[in-house]
Length: 281
Image (cartoon, rainbow, N blue to C red; front, side):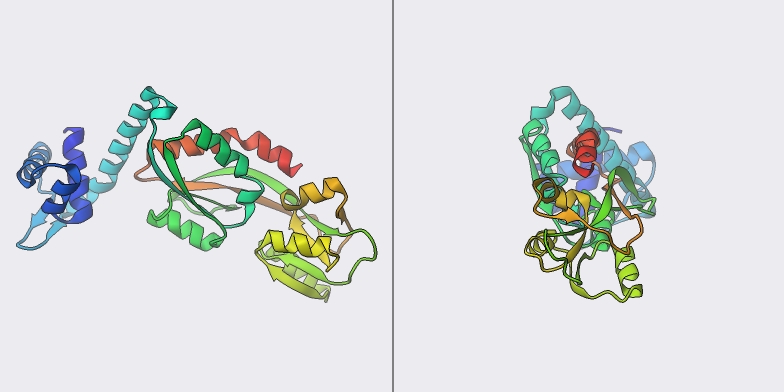
């Protein structure tokens, strides 16, 4: 079994067409057919059902598919590691369930871009926790940042840190209304039980920060989001009905079809943990 025959198998499986696979691989259709026949001969079983206008995977082909993806991903990863970071190329799709990228992860992205300049990053933020998890599971995203814990065994999960949830207000008289980040459902329950007035609920951290600095209310936010304003004195922590709350967060990534670029991004995120801990202190 050779890597080139596995690559031909994956390409035919993707297009369900020998013709389109040949176009992608820059080979003749007969050359692709020969590679598939060689792979089927080596395995002793048919991988495709070839009909007049369609090509479909057999049960054996569907069984081989994720394994072939893993084998080629490992081979590509090993090749990239040997060649060095600047030889690593490709595209990574990163999803984010919050606006935390602008606060927690911008330095991580900077590190990765400088270390792997030939990898193109597609980063999308604030698509929602469930949508982020679904995108990684479906292969529409390679990795995603979201709140932990993650109760799923079909993705790899790396917890990157945790932060306190704080109540903050601008100096001066404190307004008796609250500005609530929607990533903290426990806070909403406590404030509702205490019959407190909630003026704004939003997933937009920047909006809530602007409102609290302008004395529109008491904001309930993760410490990483308001750290700079706390240090400058633009806002200060205040007492509230909230019990001590903490937010856990991290990175999930796809298990099958992992590329060398994805492994490098996960490693960069893991090495960035001390910086995240400092941002959340």
